[in-house]
Image 1 (cartoon, rainbow, N blue to C red):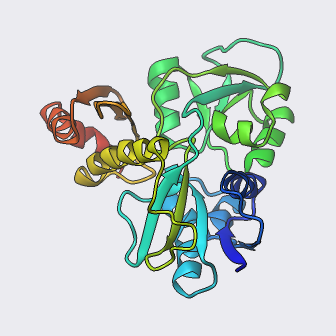
Image 2: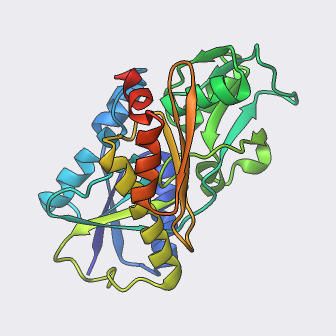
Length: 281
């Protein structure tokens, strides 16, 4: 059986597919490249759109029988599963963001910093004290090209993506210590409920922990109505599922935590975190 795998057509998306088929020893497959609405918006230079636009067209391909499975960046997937589609999270790498410089230099608050993410913009403002933050669109190659031609002095990207593209050694960068988005660095595999060719419901212990951890985060995000584009960072401990994160408003931010999803939500509400979350709507 030839397994049809739907994916975006970017270098990173295809590298993620290759990582998946290598890990699960899939030799008979065909990649179905999908140009999503998110890709079209990004190519037009748009930055303020729901990251689910990178996923929805691929899901349509699954539902109409155009593909058997789909591989996504987990952080682009919405908190809730889509009707008729099952989801598994797997193959996690570091969730860190990195600050990449165009030359051998150190960060300065006056630098022109580029990022498309509202979360990263506000983390740069509140945690780095950055004063000049500008929108940055495009795929990884395009963003790095804009950096090196001098449009920006530094840009923020996910470390895992650059690791998957084997590009880290050629970059000048600094690891950011802040918490990032739910599922960053992890892959999401989606498939129709009745597709059992890969026995994807029989998860190993590591993958089971990844799924339990991300699902606990998604419970929080769903309850507070946060989207992929919300200014919230969140992480959970894979062992005891304790949750922590931040919500960033225009002028301030809060840190929240809890020993469970329920406790974390209570902590957010107690600190008026929902008001901060909705400041950008």
